[in-house]
Image 1 (cartoon, helix red, strand yellow):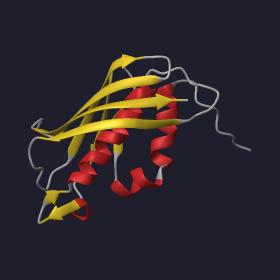
Image 2: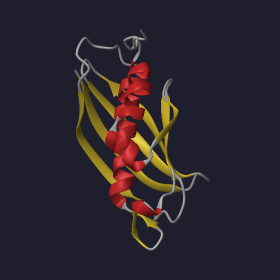
Image 3: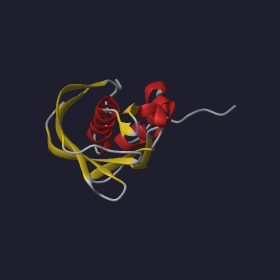
Image 4: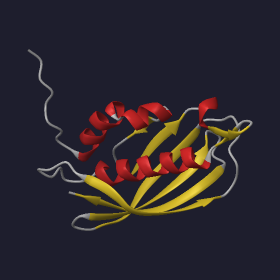
Length: 141
């Protein structure tokens, strides 16, 4: 019988959670990096994520940023007994449209408190062109 070992680090939590999340899977978000000072998640181009023509929907971009906030908040967190967490606030600035391209979210922790983690996320094209910026607070536990 095979058993899944409990996560040992916050990065382990995310490595196990992201592929199993129905919403993450629906959007097609994949992790490129889940540990260290920053995380990187990719939203592959998919015409089901557009608003008009080939323009990626702002809601898909915001969802990518929100998932990156969660991932970076957990990345270097101590794993609590209860695996709970929630984004408590997020401000989003859209800087440019994204047309028919993969997007990458780069998340960083600005400040880590006892349970609240302040984060920022840059959403860029695969070529590094800025698309959006998010500042968020995530609560662990």
